[in-house]
Each structure stands twice: as C-alpha cells, then as structure tokens.
Image (cartoon, rainbow, N blue to C red; front, side, top):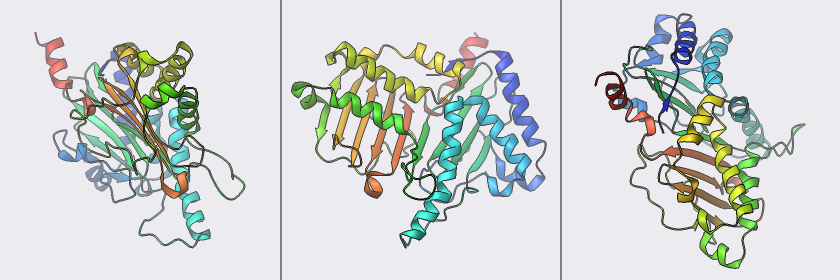
Length: 326
C-alpha cells in the first residue's frame, strides 16, 4: 500500500526535515544520515538493544522538538500521543523494576530513541526515508516524489497497565486489546472453533522483526465472510484503529486502497480473559496486523502492521519511473 500524495504535502514534509537538519552539527549529521541503499534501513528492533542513528539524548531540547515535528506531521494525534506514552513508559518501567528488585541487562532510558535519515530529502524522485526506532517504537517512512509508504509500523507497551504511583491503572494500547476481545467473545461455538488456533498464545508476534513478510501466509482462523454483520463491524473497527496511527490523509488512502476486508482472516490464541496471555492476528493478502500480550504477566504488549507487498516502500522506484518516465 504505497500512497500517492500531493506535492504540497511533500514540500511541507521536506521543509520540516530541513529545518531539523539545519540545527545539527557535523557529528550529529554523521550519525543521522545513511545512504538509501544502506542495509541499516531494514535493521530495526523493538527490544531495547543498541540502535543506530542520532539518539534523543544527543540532541538539544529544541532539536528534539523539531525531530518530533516530523513524526507529528506523519502521524495522527492519537498516533503521536501513543508514541509519547510509549517513550514515557521507559521511566515507569525503570521505577517498577527497581520496586520489584528485578535485575536486567537493559538500560531503561527515554533518551535512547534514534532518528535516522536515509538518502537526501528531495522532491526530484530519488528515494529517501526517515526512521524513528527505539524500545517498542518503529515509525518509518520511505518516500519518492509523489509516493510514500509508512509500513512497517510497530507500537508496544511495557507495562501496558501501570502498576504503581499516581498513574496506576493507566493503560497504553487499550483499544488494541479491548476491541479484539469483544470480537472473539461475541463468537458462537462454531465460530470460535475456527478462530481460536490454540489454548496457548505464542510468546511473541510471529513475524518478529524480519525484513520482509512476503512468505507469511495464514490459512488458519475465521474468515471475515464467516462473521455476522455486527461482528464484521467490530473486525472493521479493529482494523481501522491500527491504521488510525497515521494522519488523516494517509489513513483515508490506506483504507481506500485495501482491497476488500472480505479477504481477511482473524486468528486468536490463548485466554479470552484480561490479564492472561493472549495473541491475535488479522491477515489480509495485502497486510498483516499482529498483537501479542504474554510477557510480564500479560502486561506487555507488542503490535505491528506489515505490508506484505511493499514494506519499506519496496516498489517506490518502479512506481516513480512508471508514472514519470513512460
């Protein structure tokens, strides 16, 4: 799902990127920039391991604001607020692990989120991209003239429900869990037999952080066409909620370009009850959405949207040449 966008939009995006870049010194730029062909463009991790790029802790407050102005432009308000919450959870998690006297090898630091730019921001058709990657966050765009792709997209949360302090009970990614549970619990015996793959949920999303998901093909689960109309509405609401991470223009284009939800399947594994390990996926020939909540007492969520054909804007160049060089 590569989106055709207006020149006005691309000019605004480039302007925001240049405004940020112009504040950086040479050492910062050296960390920020990679060539578009560099394999680092596909090197993403949702675990808190070392990432590559320019970290927030290496920027001034003003530079951080300008960097996030880029992602705010690409995401919806809900999407941007969610990114902020996920980054804030690093402090919450650090406090909780100390309260629990848990030992780990990770550095819980909200400054360890990295911006990277691949290629040179331009409007002449040469592809370029931006990435924000850190623990439980992947925001990435790949861009060529009028064409743009924002997948893969990863949001996670640990804890998904805060267990201490004045924010105790606050949840991150609640709708991803609640809408899906409403769907599975609405199913009758025969529907459940199709939808529920097994009683035990997998320990993580199946696609993990593979570069491409073209080989993934799910035949299990319940077909969208086997749902009642009321259930179809819930499944559609769940699907749309994931794409609402992106701004209104991207959201409407993604939804318009999805080739019929009739081709979608819904798979569930694990418990139907809150705070028990569970997993689900929405599989469509054009995309995969995965959700997993099994770790840390089922209080640790991973979610991802993958584009089966065009993750990382794989066909950007061919689309550009087809449109402008025929």
